[in-house]
Length: 556
Image 1: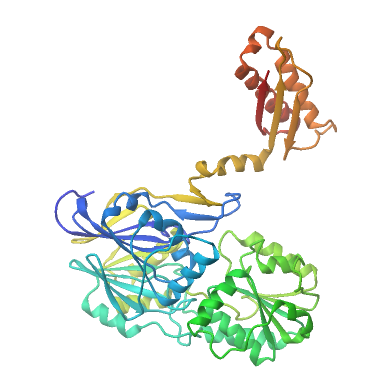
Image 2 (image 1 turned 180 degrees about the vertical axis):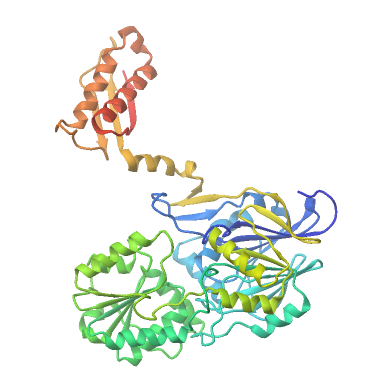
């Protein structure tokens, strides 16, 4: 990295670039040895089946923790989990003031209370259109449209130039919640001169423009009108505009709405307090469900990504006390599939179909639209901002490269491809990667946060693959076995191909291994333990073709 005393403006992502989710961006200003920093967004991503038992995945922020004396603040663009979900877990190590919109601040407080978190970060509330100072940065919040209330882009001004950090955004001529993306303000900022555009790439591979949210509302209403039984709709809990669309469609078709799922109820409480759900009929209580005719009910529920403990999964398994679906009912997936969740979602769909329930998804009717810009929308943003540098973010490699090619084709002078951990100098001079910093993933596992090794994920994978065998060997005063060892096998095949019990095979191998050791050498209990362990693994492999984890206790 540069070591001179000149001021520089740098950008460094620690999450969300080269992947979907876990967004965490750093902006630094000043000489390399004493830069002042801000963080934009502190997000999570969700574990896949390769992380058994893990609750959440958080960015590794050790780099900025090492610069903590010069961290001036944290700015949150909106309240999606992949942009703010790690804030409560990360704040004790970041300890910087936080800036959030009213809805984001309300969601943070609701999460803190619901999860019984004692940490309470100091929050400064801002609104779109306002400016505020954070260290050497002057930040202006610009209204955009997204699938959540109060999303903003940020114009980050420094003595070396202005950066526009878009966050998540789209162009929607008819959103269900105001405001629209502020085209005029983007144009004005573009005329002032923009050094770099740090831009959402999620839909950079999709041509055209996204349909409007009001068109989705009409699509959902049409499906409900044609449905003869109950209708259940699952969507992202944070999409308050979609929640309002569903509630309005239910009202207009003579139905009442029952809400199932803690995260949905939490969002509805915050949105209701801020007036986003004004004018809607009250929601049903669960105990009233059985008294309402089937054709008069819409169930709004969590579980669009196949989460096994969410309301939709419980409905599919018929595990709810007061609420059930039956043949002839309809389930609408008003959501997109997050990569990695395909199998879990398909399992729930199949469970519902087996019960005679009809499935409606985006390919069947206009029941969902993304909150991210397609290629024509990106081109409009480029024409408004006229940046010198384009840095694609928020996406996997294919998305980032697609947006880079689009920007280059649109005439943006410099397109800089970065990945997590890259530090890019945006000014002065041409864009250049000037170094790399530590980055990675930490696991939230219950109350513990740590690496895969620290929280035990690696061993869990082994357990899931080949199980665990525990052997207890007791030696008497003469170092002979005091009876037959005890053996317990968990997650191991019951018998081999000939029908012989695998526990018996492993036990015989362990006994033979111990007896083969001369009695005087059995005084080395560690050696006895290791011999028995190897024998059990080898016997299991010969009989079964897999080597379980083996733990041996030897005592006398």
